[in-house]
Image 1: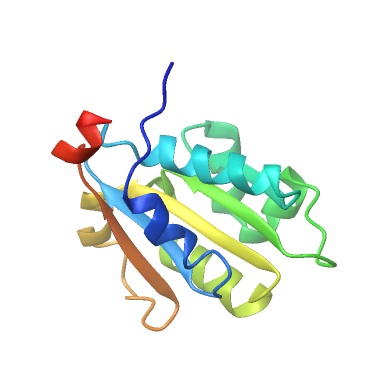
Image 2: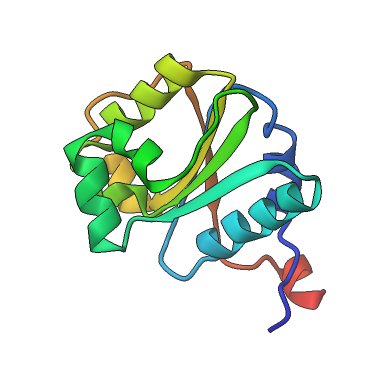
Amino acid sequence: MKIIFRDIIDDLRRFLNSDDILLLTGARQAGKTSILRFLQEELNEKKARTFFLNLEDPDYLRLINQSPKNLFKIFPISLKEKTFVFIDEVQYLKNPTNFLKYFYDEYQGKIKIIASGSSAFYLDKKFKDSLVGRKLIFPVRTLSFREFLR
């Protein structure tokens, strides 16, 4: 399967070394998961430590909903070097805000969260806190005409 380079990837690359949580939002099948995988692969090629968590997996979802610290039970995250954690379908968490705030506040500079979720999750009532000053939102749309022509 050929992966089409998305223009948004350049925007995301500029913030990979920032402390901000990067949130990709968009409709189903817009390419959010593919973008996360593409970025993870690029970082892996640079020998960065990366992990990918798909919250459609009910076992992982249950563990993370019990406690954000269970992320350390799922992955062998070392705090000695920066680790990039890609989280797909973050809207499935009972309280995505608390999860994201916890990792930002406790592990800023050590764990970088890049997450995706449906556009609806950001408007959902369970996203109580706006995470002001902690996150950057990147809307993922369907392919642009330029992307389609590639």
